[in-house]
Length: 297
Image (cartoon, rainbow, N blue to C red; front, side, top):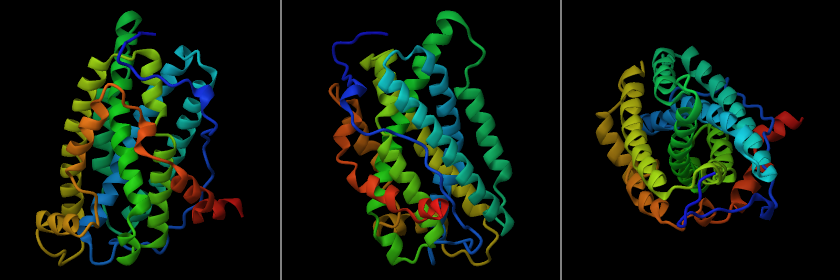
């Protein structure tokens, strides 16, 4: 483990909450193509969150699995195992949503496969060995820690975006993204702490955070444009860029400026994800999510 004077490291023995995968059941049968009524572009931005980003989450879980044997903090090991379980459940739940949308005409299988191929080529283990393998593992942990900061911030936004109910978002999809967002808030510290445990270099953390920002923002833009073009619905409305501006102004989607306003906070030497605020609302949602109750019954 690398030591760093500016690093912020929190032993997991001080944390009372235990992360674990939850059994959930979503019924997508009645979900329409535009499950936020009248919001074609906003619907497809949400689609990016649960059709495209899970490919990165899959690679992140694989990276954490590689790191697990190197983590000698038993509490952190427990949290990493819980994180991997949650990401696996995310992947299977979003896959079912993708299959449903595909069945009603949104052909995204080829695009999602291409994203998966790209993620594997860019963020896989590359078959390295020795010191090169360790360095690449630390680099990937830094990248994923930066990405997880943004997904936690978006998760908080989803939990507080009352406008989604006001616009009549389909309950199953609303529950899906809020359940996912709540778990992003719940496990927001895990990848960061794994990175700090195995490396802790602030220089690497800053560099990889900038790379994460430079990756996620274009991915959102390109993926949203692709999904909008793939939407077979006649009369989709104004050009997607105009819909994007309107949805952002009305708060139906998170502001793209989040990628820039959050980066300085993450780059502070004393930053820790717990500084994002209490996770009480996320935990309350996870306790009462319709999908979790459906699985329990």
